[in-house]
Image (cartoon, rainbow, N blue to C red; front, side, top):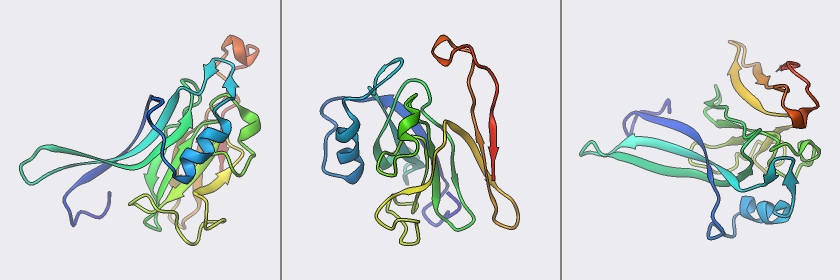
Length: 176
């Protein structure tokens, strides 16, 4: 986190197991229920991504703050890129969970680059001010960065040669 007024902190994108008790009324939770019945080639969406802010309290103990919770994902194609952009907002790459048809769906958070404020709200200047979706149609973005002029770059991971990928390998993308 570039804002060190509360002390140094690190943003982390963590993929964890879902529990059926993780149900609330947030937009993301409603979207999760909408796609809950879908199965990727490797099984049901039993995982979730969380955006965490890690810092230390005054006594030096680790403080773990959940910024965004319950982003649906799978064991494969979970995504993993996270960075604070030059605009001060938090960018989070979420993979397509091996459900590529949802990468183009504007209502499913899979296969997207999401954009939040650093406290987990949706910025008013997002393409849709009611949605964290900033870029859609991605496979499994593994890295994001910006050029000096503010141009956003992303590396999208291609097939790894596994059986469910019909033996395809390589084909990574570099998106501008």
